[in-house]
Image (cartoon, rainbow, N blue to C red; front, top):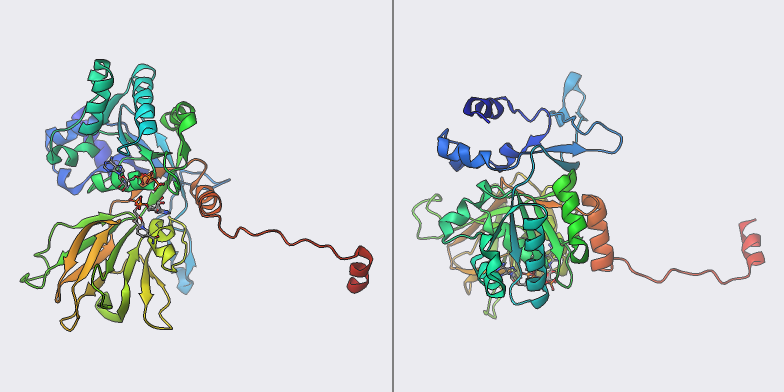
Length: 411
Ligand SMILES: NC(=O)c1ccc[n+]([C@@H]2O[C@H](COP(=O)([O-])OP(=O)(O)OC[C@H]3O[C@@H](n4cnc5c(N)ncnc54)[C@H](O)[C@@H]3O)[C@@H](O)[C@H]2O)c1
Ligand SMILES: Nc1ncnc2c1ncn2[C@@H]1O[C@H](COP(=O)(O)OP(=O)(O)OP(=O)(O)O)[C@@H](O)[C@H]1O
């Protein structure tokens, strides 16, 4: 494609016809018109995301979510419809991420790499550890690519059309954590025990990948939270550590301390409450079925935009969990009268100590995690809560009274 044609696409695309891949996958850092960045994007497959609704033209997407015409407030279009991905050019490069220390994952990975290379002629990236494992198996895997340092990981989203995960939910979280900006569509195969976010069955990997590579495929756009730790020693709010993105949740807890946590919580500068208990979970709706669920939070469909505010073992009779709207910024402060520091952890990892005076800021992140669905976002969510969590499993009540008596009661 010529440079001027590419420029035209960038300039013309206005989301009138859906969300196009270069809009979803472009990050601010590469907004410059440098030829280097553009040529990298040209290597990527192009796809289009559109709202999909049974019986409606999937290409229709109105921008006016709420209309105030003639003083009447109506909701013209809802923001979280089912989304469908259609490839506009063929995907060429896949990244396969695997859970470590699993023999079955290792075997499947080798089979998948061979099939994707031989039958689909795709370029394949894996982690350095996995490339080494493949090469110990056979030097034929020489064509498999990897990276040398973190700088290259930052550029992966410009090269990779599709990410395949082989593992459980932890591997999906791992995949999401590798992309600090835009995330390519993820196809999660289930090789764990629960697999709430991994709807694809590894036994049928060829049929599944055939169908995803052909498209269209239903997508769940999973929201992430952007977290920043602000140290009391910092001179101003902008002097923060690297922001951290979470797909499930950020947890602020008492760590090894035996004292109650004491956390002051603010929402857009309004005081919300003080958490006195084991801690607090700020969760995405995807994470609502993980730790937040165990702490008594509601289960929420992953495409509902919102932030769950779920206390952990609060020492109070009336502290119910909340769900806050997507646009708020939460600020959790460890006050100076706190008896001990608190600890923040991000998707269950990377624990950071929060000393008195430190704060954690949390808001919705701009780049969601698109995961491919087996059926569609709602069917997959319902299957997961039913099959994975056995939601509302109960023996069906039977009727064993005499039929005649029942008839008499009805008269
Ligand atoms: N008491 C708890 O329930 C508890 C405690 C600590 C961590 N966790 C969760 O574990 C997550 C980290 O997962 P991991 O696999 O790296 O650790 P892990 O191996 O300890 O697995 C935690 C379990 O949570 C499940 N899980 C993860 N994300 C989920 C989601 N979005 N919906 C439903 N189930 C989900 C996993 O399938 C696994 O069974 C954290 O983000 C946290 O939500 C839960
Ligand atoms: N590519 C990877 N590199 C390093 N660690 C990883 C990678 N993929 C997954 N992990 C970590 O390995 C652990 C186990 O992964 P995962 O949850 O996917 O498998 P599992 O525990 O068998 O699944 P389940 O939780 O459903 O039983 C997680 O803590 C996850 O963060």
